[in-house]
Image 1: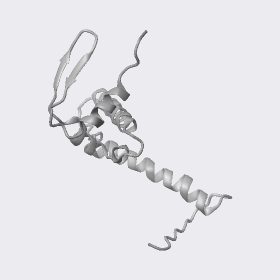
Image 2 (image 1 turned 45 degrees about the vertical axis):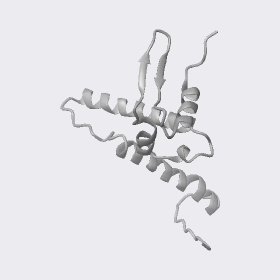
Image 3 (image 1 turned 120 degrees about the horizontal axis):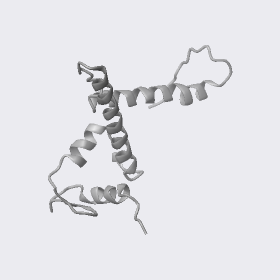
Length: 135
């Protein structure tokens, strides 16, 4: 509501304040948000194993989990609020649900309950994230 004046104190030469704020400062904040999501929603800062190799493996698995969540969020429709949702929100609303899963030789069948509130979104995500069809 009105002006939102920002001041930048920097030793970077050249460049306008708007460019420095929007391209450099905001990008740094976004990187910190990614780290916060990685630590808070995936508990990736838990490296309490007694062996360094085990802790390193945990960090690699957490990195893979972060990539999977990021891919799931990126597969959501562009104008939906799910595209900007935090990982714990996605987990609670899209993954943590009752379903019947049957594993066949060539495919996996997921049967959602009839009263699933986000069935349309889940079907869209299943199609978007499915492996490519082989000829």
